[in-house]
Structures are given as structure tokens and as C-alpha cells.
Length: 205
Image 1 (cartoon, rainbow, N blue to C red):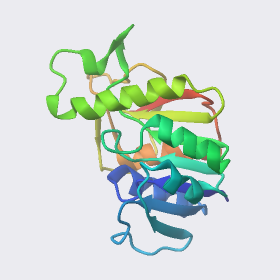
Image 2: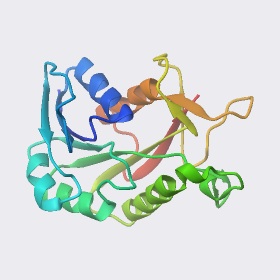
Image 3: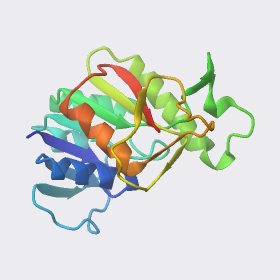
Image 4: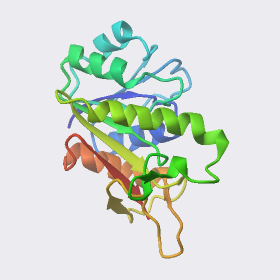
């Protein structure tokens, strides 16, 4: 059993990661600006707080084994703020719910830079890439950035998925996708059995 501080528990990915953690017996502190909609569950404590402010979030992270950030990149805490809070709190690990936009579709070519990348996702994807770049420049925090497939929606919990690296994973038909429910399995697997220290990995079918 580990003590996990989860920023962004009210989001679609964050809520599923919280459920996966609780189902496996971990204790979770769920953090969001407003946690009033989060139902009570055994092993779960909720705190309403602004995670973009280091002086607010750092004391809430103290005493945990792992920090999970499932907050949006565009409008959520930036990497420097979060890393500073993790350092101040003395938490040994940080795992981040990443995006697919920074994954490579060819050597040196990110998905976000390809023709036809949806404008609606560009700001969030760009902020996610900047967040990953900042993590890659950090040498004193044990971080992991977990990118899903290009289509990332609620769906079936099958337990069948592939683990990749910096390249966009696609299936035989050229599709790149993973359900948030299967992604949560892979994410919590990494918390329990760390394999990607200061690295990004990807999850897709």
C-alpha cells in the first residue's frame, strides 16, 4: 500500500486512476480546485486547493510516496511549479498524465507538428510538450510522463494494451487509441512496479 497524492481527481483520467489505485488498496489524497462532486470512498481523502500555487500545494503533497498529476497542461500547474512543490514536500516520485501530441510519428516529427492536427487540441498539446521538455531538464526528481494513444476516451477495461516509448503506437489499421480505463491500469502498474525512471512511455492498443 502506498500513499498517493493525485492532482486532478475530478478529471476523466484522474478519476479512473483514483479508482484503480483504490481498488488495489492504495490510499489516495485527491486534489482539485473543487472536490465537492467526488463521492466518498474507503481510502480516499479529498482536498479542494489551487495546484498552480506552490505554497498551497506543497504542504498537501508532504507525507506521500508518489505524486500523480492528472491536471490539464493548459491552465494547470506548470512543470516548474509542480517540480518545486514536489521537492519542497520531499516526495520521491512524480508521475504525469501526458498527451499524445508530443509523440513522434517519424524521427524528429511530433504528432502536433503534422498537417491536420486539430486546432482544438493545439494549445493543450503544446503545453504538454513544454511540460515534458521541462521534466527532461530535471535531474533531481524521479519523474515519469505517460502518454496515451491519439484517441483517448472512456471505454472498456480490457487489460490488453501495448507499452511503447517516444513513438506514436498504432495498430495494424493505422489507428492509435487507448481507453482511459486501460490507461489507468498501465499507469498504476508503473506506480507499483517502476520501469521508467526519468522517462516518458506510451500506452496504446
